[in-house]
Image (cartoon, rainbow, N blue to C red; front, top):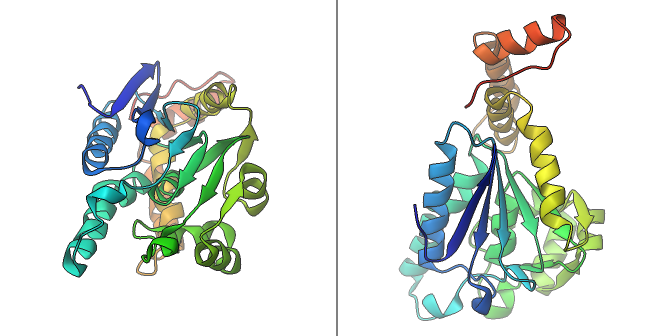
Amino acid sequence: MSYNTLIVTKKGAIATIAIDRPKKLNALNRETIQELHDAFEALENEEVIKVIILTGNGEKAFIAGADISEFARFSEAEGGKLAAQGHELLFNFVENLSTPVIAAVNGFALGGGLELAMACHFRVASENAKMGLPEVSLGVIPGYGGTQRLPQLIGKGRAMELIMTAGMISSDVALQYGLVNHVVSQEALISFCEKLASKISNNSPVAIGNAIKAINAGFKNNENGFATEIEAFGASFGTEDFVEGTSAFLEKRKAEFPGK
C-alpha cells in the first residue's frame, strides 16, 4: 500500500510509520489522518507485525498540531463532527489496537500531535522534544482526547495548568511528569524504540493484546477494569500462546509464539 503523507517501513516483527510532511512540520490534515488510519489498520491485520513505532520525518517535529487552515472557518456543527470523526478514525482507534504502538516523539508534539502521542500505548522522547496543547490560544480546546488523556497521564492539576497556559514543556519535564517513559538523544531515538519493540515482540501477542484491553478498560467510566482483566485472564488459558509459553518455561527453553 502506498501513501502520500506517510512512509511505512518494516523490519521483521517491527513496523515504523513516519509522517512525511516536514515542510508543514508533519501537521495533521484530513488526508494524513485517513492515511494513518489505513496504515494502522493494515499493520494490525498483518500477522507478522507485533509492534508499531510512530514518528515524524525531519529533525524539527513529531507532529506540530493539526492543519488549522482546514478548519479555521468551520461552524459549530462542523467542529463537532471533526472531533467525533477524528476520535473514531484515528485516536481511539490507535488506543484500542491490540498491536502495541510506541510514539517516538522527535521535536515538537503540539495539539493534535501530542494527542496522537498520548493515544499511543507509551512514549519515548528525544532530548529536543517540546510538548503542549496550545488550543486555548486559538479560542478552542483540545478536541482529539487531550482533556481526557493528559490528566490520566500527568494528573488533573498539571493537565489543567498545561492546557490553560497553552504552554510547552521540555522532554525532561515530560519525563518527570510521567508523560513519556524515556528521553534519549534524537540520533538514538529510533534505535532505542526498536530495542524496546524487540523485547515486546518476544512475548505473546495475544496476551499483550488482552493486557492492552484490560488496562484501557480501567480508564473507561462504562467498563469494569477488574472484570475485563478476569475475563481476559481466563480466556488466556484457551490460547496456543498459553500452551507454548508454559511449555517453554517448564522445558527451560525460549518460547516461540505464533503470530497475532
